[in-house]
Figure 1 (cartoon, helix red, strand yellow):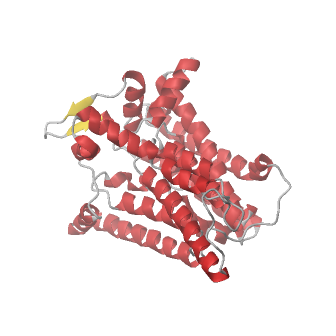
Figure 2 (cartoon, rainbow, N blue to C red):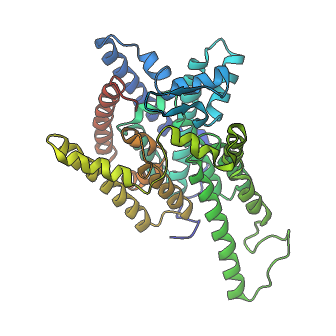
Figure 3 (tube, rainbow, N blue to C red):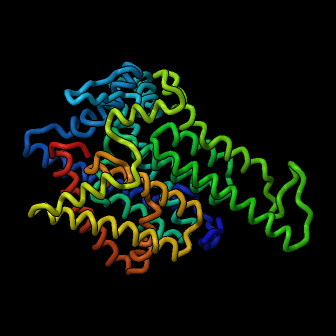
Length: 402
């Protein structure tokens, strides 16, 4: 369970893009279906699908940062202060760059970034699953991620697609020993969302585990500990891993420290910004209370039961991931993403979206589908894709943010 290595498919001769092509084509088809469903549903409700995707909720905050920079805030009647400092800067930077080099507005540049990033995320998920379990499981993993009930978020001007792309490729770099790439991508993930801490944790744990394993092997074989700069027993020098550990947290740490300096509240200033949104980490107490309150009436008790089943399913999937001996970086990453999502103290309706980057939890489902005949797995995924498209259209046409 703690090994970085995992069973991989036989050596492959296909170029990377050709090997991933079935997964990416299937992903594009699912996303297109979701957008068509959204367009039809929105037309029936006299709403603009373009506005739903690019100019509501969080996407407005990102666009405002891209357009005017940081410093905007809204003071609510109850005293809460919603500051745009809560939103990490990489997506707004890319929106600003896209608008500068194209005729697109900041909002449309956000949609373009999201579209490109979602394909990159799908490719990264395929690369990870293909490396660990083989090509067929990789294709299924991408399609399962695409047909999630909240999959429509992958097409919005939100940061989930961008973050998932950076996280998936950072994890793939760790699994394949590309430590500097892993560290750089982890740093960029940390500039995208607060949950970038999950990628940093995966890089750190993987590097530490490799150092520990080398020390153990050296003791068992009676080898002298290599000097600084000398390659480790497997031929890989140690300095890239150490440098990756230094690079990984720089993005998140840099932004958090800048917010502290900008607000004059020191290193913990970002926590005050989040408190203004009534958001923080409370170990899941607020979420548990939210679920418990559902059982005070009917039919809200059915929603409470559904939430308990959903959390139980997440725990079960994680246990299955452990039993299937997923590589340690994937377990650490998925575990941290899940804990941070479930234990946040606010925005309970957004928790499914916050769990979207936890793609390693989907690998057991992908493996199960990969064992089916192609026709049967296609029917299963096709049916779920239709249901997901309908739900996504219904969800975005609702009153609350996803």
